[in-house]
Structures are given as C-alpha cells and as structure tokens.
Image (cartoon, rainbow, N blue to C red; front, side, top):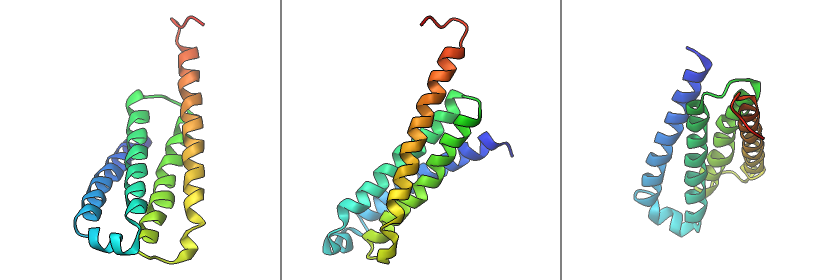
Length: 132
C-alpha cells in the first residue's frame, strides 16, 4: 500500500475514533468525567484529535509532494496518540507519568503545522503561473 494511502486511511481512522470518543465521553463517561473534574480535558483531546486528523486528510487531498509533506503528516499522525491519547488517559485518572507526554505531542503538532505551511509556500512558488 502506498504511503499516501496509509496516511489517508490513518487520517480517516483518527477522525472516526474522535467522533466515537467524543460521543462516548459525552454520554457513557459524562458522570465519571464530571466527578473527576476532567470533562474539559477529554473534550480538548477529542478536539485536537479531530483537527489533526482533518489536517492529515487535507494534506493528502492537496496532493503536495515531497519530504516536508511526509514529515508534516507524520508529525500529525504521531502527535495525535501522544497528545490526545495521553489526555484521554489523564482524564480517566490514568498514571501521572503521562503528563509529560502531552507536550511532546503538542510539539509535534507545532512542527507539523510549520512544515505544512512551508510545503504550501514551496508548492505555490513552484507553480509556473505564480506571480510574486
């Protein structure tokens, strides 16, 4: 399977799981998350997972080529489980050692967006009809 097909599948899967976990948190876990005071943490995890799943899908839809695009997409795909995954666990009163994992995922998101922007600018500058 081609790398882009894998990224498309992973982006779609991450979006699907975000919807499921959002509904699960709002319904099945609502009382528990309220009792723990972590409902906002769960919602943040879902939001960031969905936004970055969509970023992966957009990158693939734009058909940008090159190493920078692949690295940006990889940053999003690894950042989602590190950032959102650690927040899900922490929201459910998971082990506190997961706390430092969350910023690593956030850093990958920042790097992914920076590289996404660079890839877009390079693509625009490489287009023959582009006027500065």
